[in-house]
Image (cartoon, rainbow, N blue to C red; front, side, top):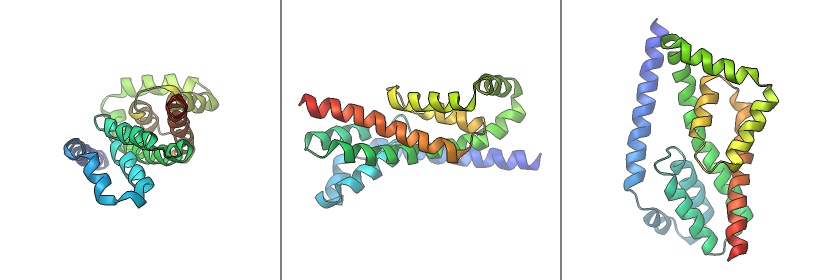
Length: 184
């Protein structure tokens, strides 16, 4: 009982920090961030914006605006896809770890939902879950938050999921970058 209470407190603190972070990012202008970092650190800026923006679906527009600006400025689509994909995956990791704690709290307080989700995913072979994860991250034009939360709640191993998310995010960004780069 004491451990569940502790996990609920950690979950509340993490969600509160996420909400505060989303409000902060919503009010910060990406152009000011780019100007303050300078032109020499542009890939670092892209990585930073990707990490910070992917921690909330509300702030992901700032990443895509920065990504498209880099493409328009003539940066290499492969490099910005890799940098952006890694940054997005690092940001998604926050959701994964929050959902790990949420899964413990949810499994004790609302076991029907938890068990239903668990049964659905466990019916798939592990390679099926990994393939679905890659396809979702690569081709779904929506944030990975829903998928990441589900995998965290269901206790998938982070070390097996994060490489798939990284490759999927890189694939998505490369497809977008290639389409825009060669269309212009």
